[in-house]
Image (cartoon, rainbow, N blue to C red; front, side, top):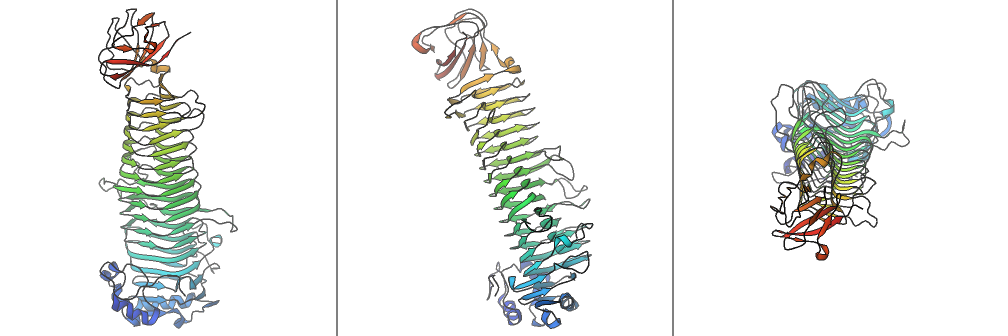
Length: 620
């Protein structure tokens, strides 16, 4: 009996089978399975299937269901008979069928079995190249293969040929239109399925509810497509006990390989899973893509690698990407959970128009990496990164490298080795709002802004438990605003941690209105000492325009002008000078502070024009 659910009776317009069609085919081969016939009705395949004379049972052509005799000739005869009348159903009832050479397929054909009860054994082909189902021609329309188990042997494939040892190999030199592949178990091929259109596009391919087991190169490989649906599939690359025992290289490989024809448009990758893969679980180059609800576990490199395409060919005009990567779960990806890189074919900084949201990533080196990587030297533009959960990465929760125009909001990055969030390279125009960021190893920072990054805002975040700094601004990072955040260190033995640590040579760095608990508010070091301005040598000097000031003379100070409620000011004494306790400055112990050179005083305005001491350091 089949393990699948079959549909009978009439369905509505968005449903699966039309009652008359289902009834007629059921008389010969059983009712239709649950798949979309909408496009097939338009193309005329439904009309062919509605006639019972268009069903070709391989048993009628001499197939052996015991697996003793080669059944390839019977399958080929059944396919050829269907092609002779411009299409039909090739039906293989439950049984074990030995297949020793390739079955060539064509347009308007549906090859179906009885679920896993129908088993095609292609593990000992007579000659190579050894693809089980194959089409190589000018164009292909309306092909469906479903409801069976097929097995190859990738160790017997001709490794000098890139596509030898494929379960289903479909290549057209012009277009492919409406290829459906569903409810298959595909075992031990180099590629489980390989679809390619050399010119034009592979229109509306659908690969659903397939299980790819122990495929050495990739479970699914699609080169170029438009409106593709990849849904409900599983790739398990575990090849223990097979050949060299190296796990499968890729799970789902959706990227171009033909010069001048690049990528995928309107791609939907939904609710798939990839396990035990040596490189990427998902490798995707696309425009207008939706990558939703997928699961990736135990990956040698990157869980989901996404490269947004600027154009479909070098002669096309630029296009918006408008893609979404959301609700995916990645566990134990050795390098990156999710990586977003530049346009790899046109070698340009891709205008991503991407949303990366609500993904759950555990383990690995980096949770989400955005920007250049590998051979790429370009970054990514225009992204929203929100609501992601990154946990237990050894290096960074979220890493931006040469990224531009990125908003990050409500992300949770905790138990991270080096930095919960790191903004690096030439990244610019980065807005970070809300979220939780924490790091927990020696010399770690919860948030880093480094290199030549500029125009960075960090606001409204909860920043916790860094060994060195809550926010570390280094390199020549400039135009950085850190405001309205809460910094807390509740570790039992805090070390040299600061809420904000600035060593950047940039001269436009402002920290304002942050709350700290268990951390020194701000530390300036190295070239950042130039950020300290000099007070006027009078009793009420202005503190407008900077947070860090050194005294400009020995005049006693009774007030600081031009602050607003919430401001924090750091006073470094370069002279022997007295700060007076009184109406405008409230000092600890209600006593004046006679500062010697090298002493520091931290004041915060809690009420309008009233400064209160929050910390002091006496240079002994």
